[in-house]
Image (cartoon, rainbow, N blue to C red; front, top):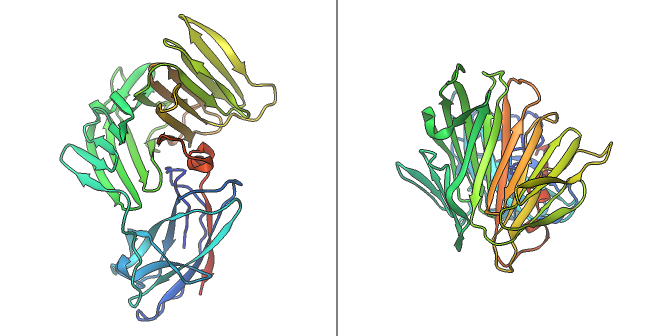
Length: 399
């Protein structure tokens, strides 16, 4: 069996996979699998989303309604969302994704038990994300996603609208040419999860070649969790390409006046953008530098020390008033040697660009945007490290 903890989001799905074999048993006899989920970042989690992926033996169950998750110590059922990923040749479930929500303390370990068999009744989550689909768009609770990419994410509304006209887009650059999703062809959308705990949308297509460049296939994954006001956006250029392709995520937020910002390059780096200012943060292993542009002139604001560890790729920005919008952001899935550039403008535009150091079999960029409700919440409820560091999971064995 395999299991992984998700929502570092790829909100990229990530985790620890462990393979084990479970002997087949009679359909009427419930089978059991013990799991452990551990907090390893030393922070309290509040309603943290977790995805476990397990492989079931042939013939075990054919319907997710015959699997449930319970606490190992008390037997208390845990509301969950279960999704079939693959099936055995006989039609029974092979790979099963289990979505749940936990609130562990620092370094706390939680033992769970998966029970499955025809005599088992699922304990499903009753509330969470809403999902609706039209020929033009997907509506996932507060998020409106345009299927024609104009823009990719059009609205984010938590009591107030967090985006302005240009919304959120992802794109690619190659050889000085820009690949835009709005010009893509052979586009297919797949709804892999519809909630209520997690929604996952996947899109595949092709950027048409131009300026002497061949066609470029791409894949997008959008992920949402019921317990968090965040979205995970992952773009992948798959293994069919060994080309130097830069990936970008661009967003325009409803922000005005002073813009407060902070970054974590190994310590707390912060400042204020006045009207017309912009900030550029660049890091390439292991150095980083930060420039501030004011009145049309850019000057170095901060830089790494020799031998300093690589900068963390997350931060916040917010309007300089008590009821202003606040957004946290984080990056993942760039190769260690790749360069990263984050640009923030006082008008609310943000661009994240990852530049590969060399051609690779596949290139990916994951950007997480957490739209923080006002008044502000506390600690790991709004902490980018909690967003970037998923809970770790492992299989303890069948019972």
